[in-house]
Image (cartoon, rainbow, N blue to C red; front, side, top):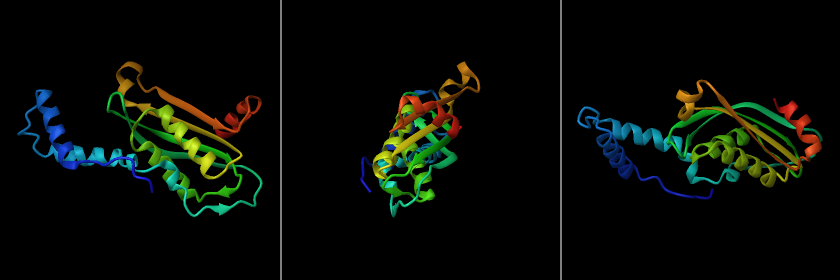
Length: 181
């Protein structure tokens, strides 16, 4: 798997302690927080070290006709602007080309693409690109629906939905979006 960056636990703990201090918090009272928070953040951005397409392993030569749909794959990510989480589900639809992927590979792909500092639109595109190129898929449609903690105060319980498609013409996009919902 392709390594893209490296998490520095000690530096992250120091940064959390400095942030708490800058926010006027009693770092002595919160002495375990830097360790706990940096560990949690490391988990939330663990996909940063991996190219999402690398999750597509042990591919199966395709001899099938039809469409593969996976619904309601849970994911969580961190907004790169606010450093706050967004949580939701992904729906994947693809028409196999050269290869099929194991279902576990596809759920791993979603989690890998999401577990990094990003924006929802980019995560959606990265998943679509990985399926389209990694499987040589004929057509791909990906939708992500998420709730963003950075807008909870302003927008209440608003859900943000993004779509990315590859190999699907404008005439077909509405029918494919109906199928994936």
